[in-house]
Amino acid sequence: MECKVKWTGDGMSFLAETGSNHAVMMDGAPEAGGRNQAPRPMEMVLVGTGGCSAFDVVMILKKGRHAISGCEVSLKAERAETDPKIFTHIHFHFRVSGKGLKPEAVARAIDLSKNKFCSASIMLGKTAEITHDFEIIED
Image (tube, one colour):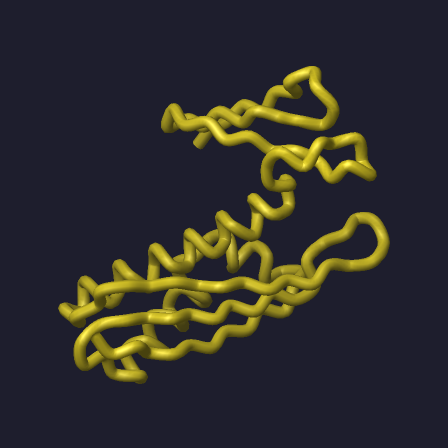
């Protein structure tokens, strides 16, 4: 896996180019010299973690032939107050929709993601307490 991050020369704005040929902007807060025109780098870490875990949950439920039609995860993170301002707690709240989804199947998918498949949350779990909950929305 590769990426390149380049300062645009404008404030604290950076352009990231991924190995899969996608680009994303990042920017800093105004108090740090940014112009608030894109997500912060640490927000991108959180977004990536949510995406990694949601990907796993959908894949696991689909492989188990469960009738999943939607998956959304909201993450709330707390960071240390002093540098390095690492994540100290991250809570994942999943909203999984489908027909006849069993709570045990959804809980198992989330647990497998947390403990076996989601590289991002497993890495962050080395410094942050990670918690999960979920709700099922019947189609």
